[in-house]
Image: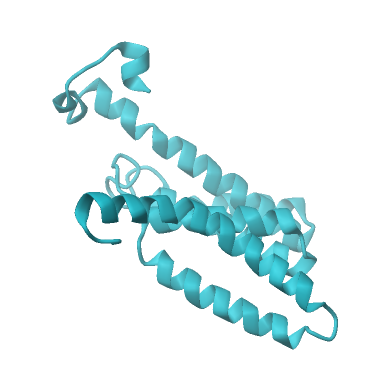
Length: 178
């Protein structure tokens, strides 16, 4: 984006100065997503505007400027990962409790993006799907197997669409799926 706006520059220009500062502005987007996602989830689960607002404020405490030193002024993946995890987990909780297909899709896509950011999320997702399948089996008297399978597919398919191209690319370019 910086190259499009300000013109091409060598990669070294992103190690310091204005280009690096512009690159770090992405943290504002991720903090906004974290805040909005937290508000949405807290509000959806409690039906209280004030609980949502309090949760959105509280989730930003660890990321306030200068605490821990440099976290906001850095390009580490903690803030994006936290934002993706909150949205993915919240969407899954609401999707499961209210049987909303679109939220299963959102959750799967966000867990996929989280996996590309933090590889350990792949293993978490596999266990999560197994636990969700077991939970569905305990609900089989209130929900058809077709609906259960559809919901699991709506979770797994977007995840696979996000993660698989990168895994295939790594295998082609590097000889490993990792």
